[in-house]
Amino acid sequence: MLEDTLSRIEKYMRKAPDKGLVANYIPELATVDPNQFAMSVCLANGQQFSCGDVTTRFSMQSISKAFSLAMALGRYGDGLWSRVGREPTSNAFNSVVDLELGGGKPRNPFVNAGAIVVTDALIGGRTPKETLAEIVQFVRYAVGDADIYINEDMARSENLTGDRNWSLAHFLKSTDNLYHECELTLGTYFHQCAIELNCQQLARAGRFLAGLNPEDEMIANRHVRSINALMMTCGHYDGSGEFAYRVGFPGKSGVSGGILAIVPGVASVAVWAPGLNSFGNSLLGTIALEQLSLAMNWSVFDTV
Ligand code: GLN
Image 1 (spheres, rainbow, N blue to C red):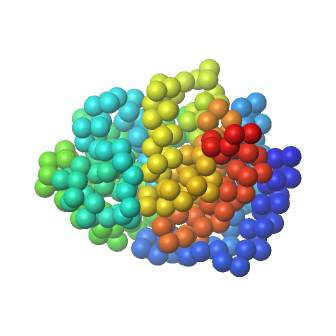
Image 2 (image 1 turned 180 degrees about the horizontal axis):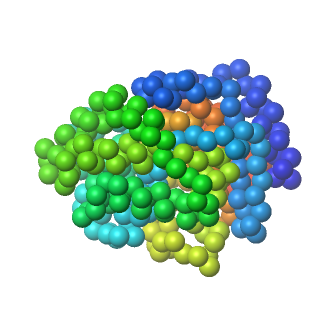
């Protein structure tokens, strides 16, 4: 049933006339072929079903924010919320005005300003290198595969062109909500966004958020619950309401076209289609998740 659904979804996506537009503000992303599609699903019984370009690697970008948040909650617990809020926003993921209106406290950990604060918190007394090694290690452990690395060209590309993130970091610094130098925290953040994996690996990475490997609790269940709530309400920025309406389970998107979506207790789903919609979320990835959700009755709002 799931296998058939996936092959039907892939066929539909290959023929879709509008594939969205790849991000062009990071030069390294602007050259990615938008005619690629992959989807992978991990189930509670350990099975994994996939379709499409499942072994092609892409950078995690903002999907990494779910993992850095998991690590920061593990380390600081509720103390983290003194620096970053938990509310959705109707502004873009890289909005400066949002941060100013919040007096330097980002609205949530998934907009860029919030994720920069979370990464700043993760650095703590460490060097950026040590911090990145811990983040990569965490992702590798979640996947159960050591073959995951940072794409240095991607990180460099973003460092050179990420003026908006630089302005967010400087604003955070001006309100004493950035504890390290801007270049140090942003350098770490850009590298975290440049962690590369393929769609199959991404689906496996989300298993701890779906509660699929209870014998190996990576973080406390109450933190899993918090992260899923935030992915549902904030994981797609100002497109989060639309995503919840259409898909009906938590998801975190990245500007490279990946989405990690969680059906609590049931499945961890990864999808990758590089073309984006107007919110900067994968256009076909969202449609694919909507089709999967409908076919499997996986919306958390389903009553049957
Ligand atoms: N690295 C990207 C940025 O900071 C991540 C944004 C995203 O994936 N939406 O702009």
